[in-house]
Image 1 (tube, rainbow, N blue to C red):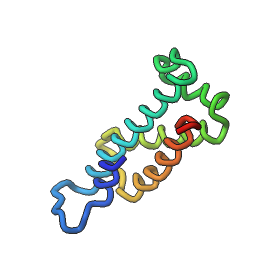
Image 2: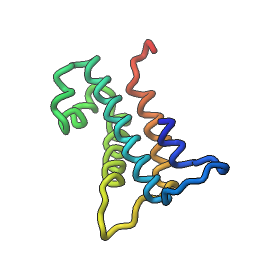
Image 3: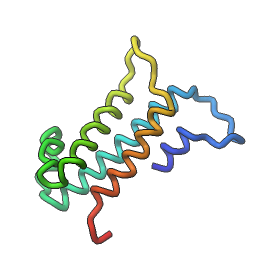
Length: 117
């Protein structure tokens, strides 16, 4: 999360040679990895077999983590997935777009964390 934040909001005194679109795409990859890791950790606690099923773990999340968390997770994961892929006919994501997803991923990591943490 910290690396994604630094890519999106670089310090003014550091010279960045990467264009904003590339930094935003790299941050999207890091955020999606963080969300995938949180989902894996969640399912390892709830039922370990769900970490291998891919799409089904997202579909079943509603019954375990609640409707709102599952909806936010699907929406955020899909948006980050789309931002990660390079398409010659589309503009890259902007840092502002991905920064909005940073806040959402932060909230989802908290929602998927065990209650006793």
